[in-house]
Image (cartoon, rainbow, N blue to C red; front, side, top):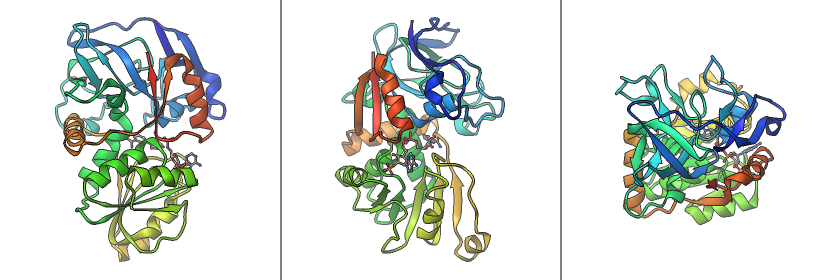
Length: 323
Ligand SMILES: NC(=O)c1ccc[n+]([C@@H]2O[C@H](COP(=O)([O-])OP(=O)(O)OC[C@H]3O[C@@H](n4cnc5c(N)ncnc54)[C@H](OP(=O)(O)O)[C@@H]3O)[C@@H](O)[C@H]2O)c1
């Protein structure tokens, strides 16, 4: 079957490890289902896989079909969206705390293919009004944004959330979800285009990257890492929280302990979300009338263009591949 996959890892030249071609059809074990992929979306995680950066110390077995997120149809034609977190068969607590957790395209083939096999519970029926196109961006960036705001931030309507790096996939989700949740949204971007996009999606105020803010915020979601870390901490009010969800520019940062203690700052990591978070998010999106922002739609055969744009820092919002 057709697939976009990684043959190996290359930290400095990830595109050299990307192949668009043929891969074997997936086996469908007992209790799993086949999803014929109609739409799949690109995440920074796919670039990390090509670069060999992974949260799993055992590393990734290549070749591996890329793609965390997707939507499509079951063999009987039922439209579904994929929840990308997998783990122990008998784990029924918070899926992100399962010691054996992983996501699609780490130890199992991902969504950039004609067909994918997933456990039955990972294929969620699409509700009325949610298209495969829009559903295909929800599994990773949107789910992480939802959990960061609704489970981790402790923010109440009217309080201010700073979103670092406005134009990214997760950041656009943070802006749309946060605005709909009644938060005051401030966002930073390296570019005027990023700031314009943030304002169109509902940000109340926007700033340049690392620009001093006119006031302190109650929470920051930072997925940029090294390049924005000091700004994130400096922007926090006493008692505030920084929710760390990524390290696009690097993971090595300094933690000023004295400031943490004296200002009672919380630093909190967050990864993906539970199956229930995904269901709650889908219901929230429908209830709030949110149309998840999509930057680019491309046939999967042209996925290399999108990988290159992400590697060169030229993406705006989510990119969806169609089959
Ligand atoms: N914790 C989790 O479960 C989870 C889930 C999804 C993603 N992540 C992580 O979150 C991060 C963002 O993921 P994403 O899919 O939203 O990526 P993305 O679409 O590529 O967005 C990255 C954003 O970071 C900002 N940025 C600032 N400095 C940058 C630089 N030097 N190079 C590139 N971008 C820079 C950009 O915003 P401006 O252009 O507006 O400045 C950019 O749009 C990644 O590190 C990813 O691995 C984590």
